[in-house]
Length: 305
Ligand code: CP
Ligand code: NVA
Image 1 (cartoon, protein in one colour):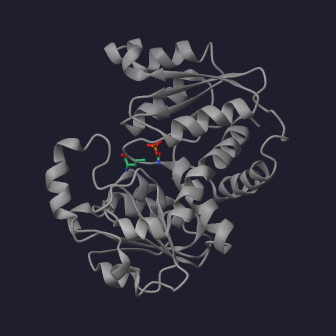
Image 2 (cartoon, helix red, strand yellow; image 1 turned 90 degrees about the vertical axis):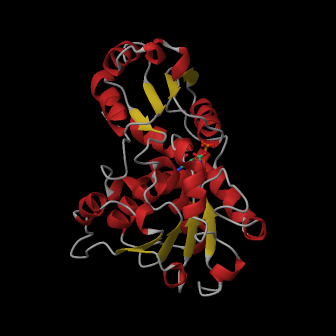
């Protein structure tokens, strides 16, 4: 039984096989195999979504499966039915589940009790499908990410940054996190990541509040929203404290001349990125969004293989 619960728990070999399969799914959008034929998957979401929901719904259908969307607040889970009971019921009816929720342990518990493939579509800790897609997109445009420098600017303690940390540890590229001290990743996460050196190499993960140094010579500059879902009560404080950590034209000057800029979306112009920079890099950013479909089809077919 295969689950995608986190990048922390995914092997480098599995990541690389998903990248190869995603390229094949992208090349043959309508003519590929239908490994989900005769199967019904559900999306069980407790948080908003545009890209993840649509790309999984379309992807499941294109792989031959049926899909149902379950808003967590509209099923008994929202009225307090335990995850492990919900999982045991859904596991007897469905063939797989894609979950977007708050606590990472809820996804793990669902996987344990449902007995069906379970895919993390974002928790407070990780967003593995997003970062697999981002790396696929980088490699599509610039070749292998190994040995490159990726700079994440903004809320370095968020789910997206945390999945970047485990990806860097597994795949062997340098990751710099540029964030104010209180928005840097926890030392506990960095210690966990350092256990995943590639061969004799120790992961190179640098956390700093020197944003210019972090961008210098970078191959990819990346950002995410300053106020993640679930953090709305801290919005005013976050906007004030993260104000100096915006991706804009001036910031990009010391990066490599052909550096890519990526954003997982949704984007808030004037906050984590300015309008001119966003629009200058929109072709890359919307390729990233489209690639969610191809990479997630690869993840689904990996999960049922
Ligand atoms: N990037 C991303 O996961 O977008 P959604 O929240 O719209 O799914
Ligand atoms: N860090 C963001 C990602 C949105 C796709 C959030 O959790 O809201």
